[in-house]
Structures are given as structure tokens and as C-alpha cells.
Length: 348
Image 1 (tube, rainbow, N blue to C red):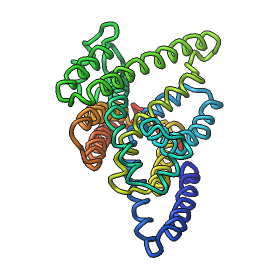
Image 2 (cartoon, one colour):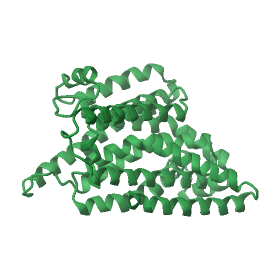
Image 3 (cartoon, rainbow, N blue to C red):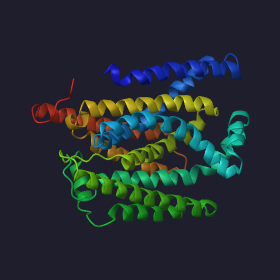
Image 4 (cartoon, helix red, strand yellow):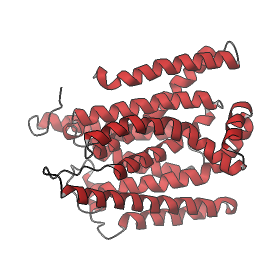
């Protein structure tokens, strides 16, 4: 197991060293406090994104080793520097109408102003993430499927919803209801962002399906070996998951460098978990884990919609996700004890 987390441990050590020197540079005597904040942020990121690791593993298992490697190398660079650091900077740059360089300078020198502009972007951002993740979660349950049902009563009802664009229609209905709770000054931007999330999912997912079918014909094994489009799909999912954590982290620290370090460490561990799940066939052994993760995704999407007009503590968000994923994991263990020879065992 150590090999899966080796890079994450290295990044953690380097991150803590960087955070120590950064704290010493900014204000001597705050080093230990800064290390605690970094540790807390990394735990928060893993807690919020554990279900992301499960979904990543489902998609990653369909990709060629080359694209798996790219996701775990290029993907982590995009996830850490692109989504956790650069994306908030770009967003603030757009809202403040400043250049990227000036925005970075503002983030380092005028944190209050930077946080103000990021707060203005909060509602449309989480609306996009919420609609995209709701589409991801519903896509697993809606329509006919062969997965192991963790909560049969709910999953059987969702399975009966089997018509074209059912996910988009359900999500659009949620967006329609959401608009009644929005102040007039943000209503248009929130609805536009939410609809963009739905359209983005349909386009990316549709292209993924097209590429799968195209490549299946040329692969003797008949397995879907998605490449670029699946890579983009995974990165978009990751970005959607991270929005809540990135925005919420400013309630814990106003230092963008400390936030980036903490979230980067968490993102590395999520990638390590993804690799562990794929190589050890964890999702085949713990049969309800994928269902639990997708329920957690739907709950996160709903919480993101609620957070558009009412603040929701990140601890609550993470706890609900952990309860759903943890519950499905425990149910899987119980099922495995009942049928010890039925399910695929992990690769040692």
C-alpha cells in the first residue's frame, strides 16, 4: 500500500516545509499555527473529495495505461496548480477586471480585497459545480443498470426514470426551484452558470460515449479505453468537486499560499486513493461503495445549491459524504461476510 501513497507523503513533507518557511517569512512565530491550518485543509479536502476518488476509479479503469498515467501526472498538476490556485485567481481577475499578474499580487498583498471578489463569484461557481455533479450522480442511478443496489428502495425508483435526457430534466427542475430562493441581483448569473453546468456535462459525457464506442470496435478485448475526452471529463469532475473546498477554505485561512499547499496535499491523497482503488480492484470487492459515492455526490450537489443562498459549513458537507461512503463500505463488508467467495478479491 505504501507505494500508492509514496508521492503523497513526499508532497506532504515538502508542503509542510514550504508552509513553515512561508509563515516565517510573513510573520515569525506563526509557523506551528500555519502547519495546523495546512493539515486541517488537507484533511478537509480528502473528506470532501473521497467520493471523487471512487468516481475517478470507475472512469480510470476504462482508460489505457498511457492515459491513466497522464491523469495521475498531468492531471495532478492541473488539479493542484490549475484548479486549487490558478482557477480562483482567474475568477477574481474576471470579477475585478485586473490582469492575472495584478490579481496574484492582490491575493498576496491585499487578501481582504481578493476575498471580496472571490465572494462575489461564489454563487455562480457553486451553481455550476452543483448542476454538473448532480448530473454525474443521477447518471449512475437513472435508467436501467446492472449495479449492486445499496439502498434498493431509492435506487429502484430512480431506475424507473428511463427516458431521454432524464438527468438534464431533473437537474433543470432543481434549477427552476432554486431560482425562487435567489436574490434578484444574482439570479441571472446563478441560473446561467447552473444551465452551463448541465450543458457541459451533456457535451463532455456525450463525446466520451462517442469515443468509447469508436474505440471499442478496434480493441480486441472489447473494453472501453477512453483517452482525451475521459481525461477532460475527470478533470471537470475534479474541478466541480474542488469548488466547494476552494471557496470554503477562505473561511479557515485568508492566505492563498497556505490554502494552495493544504488543498494540494489533499488532492495528492485523493489521487493516491484513486490509484489504490484501480490497482486493487477495490470497487469489485466492496460492491456498494460506488453507489454510496454517487449518493454522496448527489448530496454534495444539493448542498452546493443550498450554499448559493445560505452558508453551509464544510464540516457538515464532509460529514454527510463520509457517512454515505462509510455506510456503503460497511454494508459491503457485511455482504462479503455473507458471500465470501462471490466477489472479486483484492490484488495484494
